[in-house]
Length: 395
Ligand SMILES: Nc1ccn([C@@H]2O[C@H](COP(=O)(O)OP(=O)(O)OP(=O)(O)O)[C@@H](O)[C@H]2O)c(=O)n1
Ligand SMILES: [Mg+2]
Image 1 (tube, protein in one colour):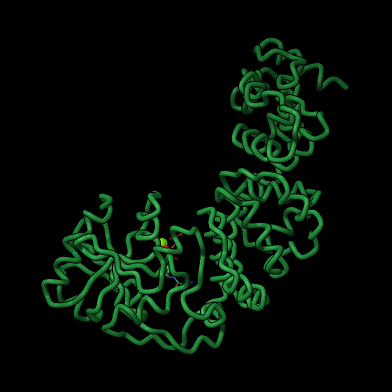
Image 2 (image 1 turned 60 degrees about the vertical axis):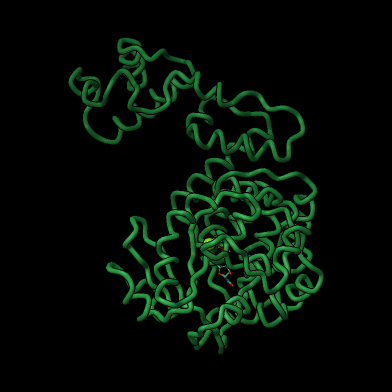
């Protein structure tokens, strides 16, 4: 058992010694069996929330309405959720009603995919009621029971299916795939923030091309912001291997493929509710990608992009440029300066020397000096910068 589980064992034992059942469930069980690193450890139990709270000293009601209590008795917090069934789902997102039950089977039955419906007990035994282990071996994503029901309950599960297909390099079972195809338009009901999370995970997965191609095949791409208008571009894109390691790279790949200019990138990513910092980096990265494609990259472009975005642009460009790229990271590291702060002269000194007065002209001069140093016109020496500042300000 991985150490993450070992550390949580006292919780399972305590619940069991009080006469209830408790298991590890969800993604951590799946990932352990697949020998992948695990993150959050989820625990499910037959004890009702009030019963769970009675067993431990320090608990927090993190999601009490759907049966989740956080236990703080053992260092890191562990979420313990009472077995439950769900009903209602009028909005295709969340149940109208949650009912706590004592049966593990009932709890596993309402879960999305067979590989996510496994339970692991304290003694290391796996409960597999829906064929999750066989599917794991065959590398298949299959809905638990009727796919249509599962996707009607939560339409985001369709995105989860393609995300897991990419992350795990699995295929999607035919019936499940048909369920996604038939219900793809339900994705419209889902908040863009939730789609965003799944989409980025999918694009950073080991088989992003397959994930994207599944989104085209199932028509899911039509129901995410902006992608509907770019079918042909996306068809071309999935033919190339895709290797991306962060969100900026993901969006930059699409921005460059869709040939978006600055303002279009902003509109595009605002629709996705992307953070401003990311939007900014995507704009810088995409700018640089266009210049890499046109083979016109100069020092000033590298300087403006910053090291991280030079790395991002190279990583994205490598996805679809066949010829080998010049070593732009090395070029970046060889820049005379990498920020204005490194200039051997400050605005204050220019004023003190009587070369300039405070005001907009001072800012412009500093920008020009910065540029002159970056492109190698002037060396970053105090005296040379001073001479340049004087010559820049002669009328
Ligand atoms: N729409 C959803 C979301 C989650 N689950 C169930 O809740 C578990 C935990 O959900 P979550 O942490 O969101 O996903 P994981 O499968 O754990 O994936 P990850 O490793 O990315 O956390 C899932 O395994 C699945 O059993 C579900 O049935 N339907
Ligand atoms: Mg999880």
